[in-house]
Picture (cartoon, rainbow, N blue to C red):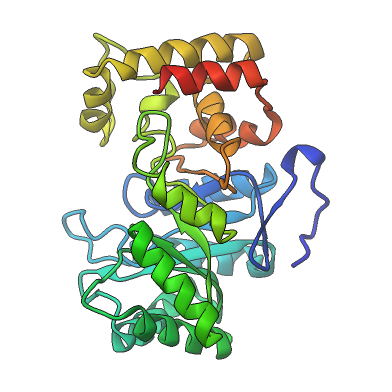
Length: 321
């Protein structure tokens, strides 16, 4: 897949299966939720102009908002792709299994849901299609065979898994290898500086052993690692409550202090440092972070230009232990 512009070395792309993706994956959960279509288009335009090419969404975004029914984010993204005519220059990831009307991973659900996603995205192919949540009521063989059918039909290029146990992930990979069907190339785990046990250990080991690229979500811990939430401060955000919980722990303030130290040394934002730590971890291909406004984007994109020293990485790792 060739981009229409040359990337600077600061925005080098990483392989993910047959795909080539930027170091920052732009989260689309805010599109059609806290960012309206005009704001979403502005963020998407600036992200691509800044060297980004990897956009993450899901068919369920944002069904949790009163008045929404799911598919809002894909619809905004599809409208943007149609307006810009740049479908082949970007890598679009979406997910199946959590939409209120299409829950679970039965073959029938997957086949119905993918066509609805394609329609909303206004495209005839999805670059990376994730199983959003594992559905243990379905044998891995059933959903992998259904996904393989989509790959063979040209509707999906690569597949990934999210919210899955280490044992089920290994079982799925073994099935793909044994049966010669589509195989997961990506894993989307919950992983950041204040939530390491959600990935490190068994799950990360399975990813490493099988050559999967991790694309962590909640990379900034609902905005907490941006450094805007401090003791005694109030922030007007839909996610402020969750971020405040981190402040109440011993680890939260300790991590903020380490982020501040490293950020100061590089004249960088804490968010950039938090993403750079994540990007430097074994198996991680590209962290996911979302920007509700244009102002939030530069600190995210800067991850492609920031390389932390071993000492700085160790300081952050220790603070987050």
